[in-house]
Image 1: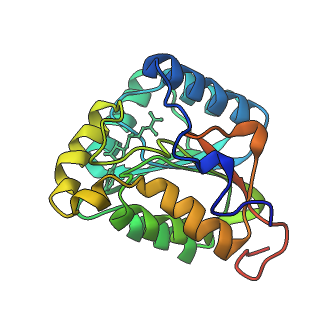
Image 2 (image 1 turned 90 degrees about the vertical axis):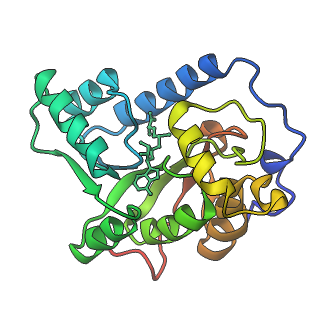
Length: 227
Ligand SMILES: C[S@@+](CC[C@H](N)C(=O)[O-])C[C@H]1O[C@@H](n2cnc3c(N)ncnc32)[C@H](O)[C@@H]1O
């Protein structure tokens, strides 16, 4: 396995982006490039987000991509309405909302319906309490050699990381449940570095990754992948 606890990608001294807005634009561009390079793929986004990303959904529509987005039900309802208003009426774009709790049960339901995906993007709660379980449930949904993408990899609830508004909300909620040390650890890094890579044999796609945005490639053959 080419990645371990000392992988330079996870070195805590890697510099943070100094222009967070520019960094977000770069991340969006990278996601669009990945999707355009995989027309007809099945794409699961865990954490749809509070803002309609018109270009993303146009790209999904134009490239006949089957999209499933998971978020709180009120966020999903808003996105459904936004897409209808934007004239993007596509039956292959679905939003599954959770009214309470987390998206975990919707991930379990997708697995029960034998749904699998070529690309999964985990950009939701960023807390280990929510996203470690979600990441493991998502592993069950990946096709062989699928991509598993992660944003805000170095975000820490206790840190001074530059963050967007939706993460700020999660930050208030989570810090009450964490000690200072736990809040200062980047939870998404723990999920990727300490669990997904060593337990499931994912490889880092170096050309698509940086310290804040990591792309993992699922193995070709494993017992946990449904073929
Ligand atoms: C950072 S935003 C997603 C941004 C989006 N992927 C993008 O690229 O613009 C995180 C999303 O995760 C959702 N989220 C956080 N905790 C959640 C939970 N417990 N259940 C469902 N959704 C949750 C939030 O509502 C928010 O919309």
